Length: 292
Image (cartoon, rainbow, N blue to C red; front, side, top):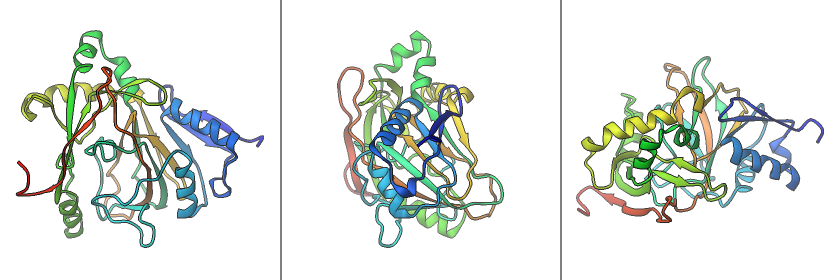
């Protein structure tokens, strides 16, 4: 494929893949180059892909087993692995890593633009590995030893609409909590990364109030402008980001207009810290009144 090209969109994160039609399948050699770029650039963008849900599922499935039905979110009829990200349901305008409140968060997420507003609605992705590299040694030494409790009860934005409130209540109907190392070692590249985001509510052994200041400081390094990529969508565009080393943010600046993306996620593994310890479950789908 002579036109095949991987072009960086920023110095620290993001690349656009050119000359690839995701609807016709990928040869092993082309996919190997895409996978290598995925690990290096953390998020890949594909413009103007005229593909179906089935093709999106096939593409995502090249990276690993697909995630089955999300524990709280609605899915496309007949396709439980496809989640319609609809601005009328929710607007995830906070930095987060998908389902980091479970013991094994997603490996990666693919998004495909179906319906777009006339303006706004960009997606931003931040590089947690670059954020970790930016830490001064004194702060890195602290982060290396910390563990954080991630929960679905943290940072769920309110839309102020009846439908939005129904989705928000469903998302939080059961409590999921998991403890993860603040510095996660990437299972393929071996690269250390700050693993936080909006679902990280507090550090293990500390209260939320005691934790929040340092969480904000560490998050500030991940969210530095030079560590982020911003994508302005066109219908048909596809992106895939590495949840093991990134956070993302859906910008809520499109007023009452329609915005729908189709999301397919890849099943992840259990995070591992610098000391070799692995993440563990605190609560797994506990309803109010159950558990502690």
